[in-house]
Length: 510
Ligand code: SAM
Ligand code: SF4
Image 1 (tube, rainbow, N blue to C red):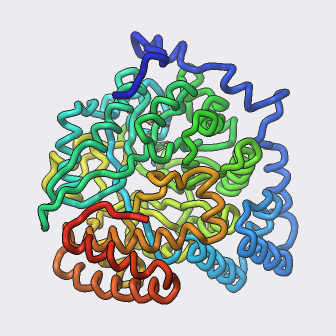
Image 2 (cartoon, rainbow, N blue to C red; image 1 turned 120 degrees about the vertical axis):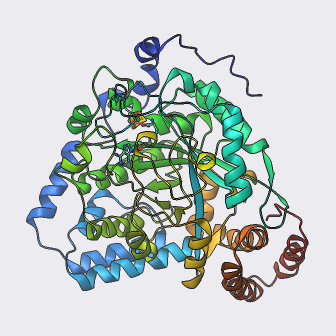
């Protein structure tokens, strides 16, 4: 059980809203009032993008720098990439983004499922179905028994090993609750539907509101994976329009310093994101680079992942339909390529908010992670027999890609891409600064290749349909051949582990 004795308790939503933010934990990372999100510099870069012609020589130099160093670009360099409109030059950028993705992550795509724990919220975000006062939303917080029912479907029927657990911001889902849900996830072992071998969730990432340092230490102690907090928009004025000043979330600086606190607390896999569609995407991406660079400057650790949620229709609000900054699929594809070149080592997540066509299209634009068999209704996995069933009143927004995990594994395999269920990294201490170096040099890719094959073997035996298994077997044979060729020293051990996995041993990793 997590030790929560040092964290503060709140009597009511009003008490929470009044007292939650700790001012000193913000000020520390904004020394002398200097802000790492430099809006004047961003606006001047956007003016330059709009008013100067694209220089292909400069663009190619920046592509080459990104590919060879794998270091985060300067905002000025990212701005140069944003000037590209010529389709052929963009294709050069896309191809480089794909090469970098392969250098760092090889032909792997990591899969996960969202698990919504609650939709109670003290905030009033104008675009979100969960916001306080939205009477169209039916509210609930999962009990631990209900959570176990959800896990039985996720780990026993679908075969997920990674979750992103999502929480509204409310005293009923305090840090103590979050810690208990994480512990419950890790301790639930469920027989898998095809083989009967026990499966469990091995990595729980969290998407929740910013927390103070003591609370983050508690989450670290229970083995949190990545802590995700989306900034929504880095544009302060727009941020204030979307998030009322009476709400906790109305404090821009509390949110934008949340990862500084994470890294100080030792939660060193942090996931950045912006809600694309609220503001000019160029502003958001340039600010993201500034954010990443400030984390690197303080802690030598950058974002473990970047997420690219787009505004989607939600209950009780028309902001998602009416925002003047909504982006189309072409722009979305551009954002991904520029992001991959700008933060070459980071994981890039594209969620099932996107349509299947959009996700298929951007698979070779630098992305590394996607969710599938997703249900974002509270208790949706165990209440609905049909995985793709959605109910607007029980969920935050509507999903665009309803493919099952089995369908996705099969589709990825048809594109010679291996679905990775590997969660070894953080369990072997390969997190934060340690994993940053391994990623930039391509070393992590090698361990992950082996772990991807072992976990893929597990998944095919435990969950795959016959059709998926057939195509998966062929992919595994190719991958083993690749390991024999590229990693001859490891090959005999890999083979032993592989055979043990085929006999039913589980969770073997390098
Ligand atoms: N309550 C926490 C918070 O806001 O930080 C975390 C959970 S919140 C449910 C997760 C994310 O959902 C938000 O950060 C926001 O980016 C995203 N979101 C909210 N409304 C959305 C919408 N209409 N379309 C797409 N994403 C949305
Ligand atoms: Fe609450 Fe998060 Fe939705 Fe805002 S985005 S209303 S904080 S759940």
